[in-house]
Image (cartoon, rainbow, N blue to C red; front, side):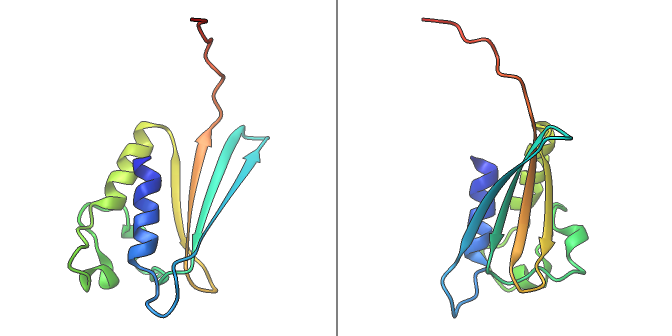
Amino acid sequence: MFILGQIISNSVKYAEKKSSPFLQFSINEASQSEEIILSINDNGMSIPISDLPFVFDKGFTGDTGSYLSRSTGMGLYLVQKMANDLTIKVEIQTNSYGGTTVTLTFPKVERPFFREV
């Protein structure tokens, strides 16, 4: 919940002021690698390509974030840290048409045995 909340919060925070925030969620299954892929696309300000290697660094706000007083540079750092602990791969890319795509890749896990109550 924290990871998704942070991604949604950033999408809204960095939305273009002239349009309403728009988020599109899509889920795919990569059967050959046995992974579930959740992609989240937004229509916000694109992250400059030069900033992409640093977005998960502790305290990094980039040029756009430094203009917003509520940017701490901790959100995506914590997302990456938590995702690593849960073996979830997180990737961020800037879209050529504007906006950003965040991709979360989850490993498939076998269902645990359920106890009947």
